Image (tube, rainbow, N blue to C red; front, side, top):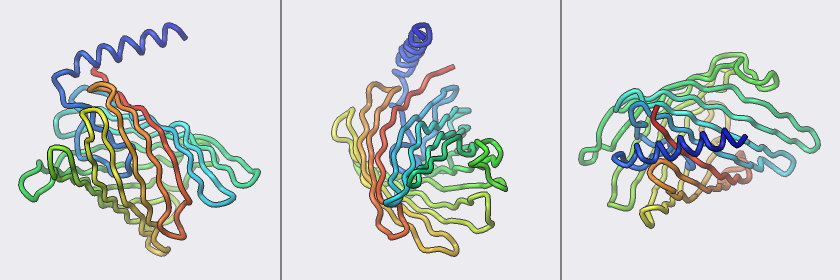
Amino acid sequence: MKKIIVLLTLVLIHSYCKGQDLPSIQTDRPDQTECPFIVPQNYFQLENGLSFEQIDANTNQIVAPTILTRFGINDHFELRLTTEYIVNTEISNTVSGISPIYVGFKTRLFEEKGIIPVTSFIGQIMLPKMASRQFQTTNYAPEFRFTMQHTLSSKQTLSYNMGAEWDGETPAATFLYTLTTGYSFTEKIGGYIEFYGFFPQFEKPDNRFDAGFTYLINPNQQLDLSGGISLSKTSPDYYVSVGYSFRFKI
């Protein structure tokens, strides 16, 4: 264990030194809005989180952990892998395991110019059998979204996503949106507020609100804290989440 801790420490110190000439780490967490920025070439970026969601009076879900692994291919393209270990509890019945893995990519489409926001596209697919037996689905399930961001000032941005996803069981799509504004209080501390939601083809809309903070430890490491509440009867009651993200060059 001590050797692992020493090795991880050396990797982070090395990545800190290598990252001094790069912009600070840009993550897709803690908000629900994916950012349009690409991980630098030849860098691995791991965005790790723990969350608790109270779905209703009798049901809750713990995700411990969720890990988004990103790898920069070039200035316009990155590869993505999402894994989650979830614990679902309904009254006294608990089911836990690995949810289906997502693999995909993000590609830069446009740079910011005037009223045109910096824009990227994320495409990924859920692998139905790459999961614990109780969470496997019948079919492959795609998901896509366009990610946009406007610079409002040196301290504030406006970001939004639009896209759709499938659940691996039915052919019906669920459309999604996010809208968030982020603000830099200092060089290290940032915050955001956000509205987001889902529109299933044959069910009622699910709208939610969340907010959170980030703390930049150094250009390659970031902590985050966030939480959200429901805005619709169909939405989960609330959630809270903490996270730690870092990147390093291979």
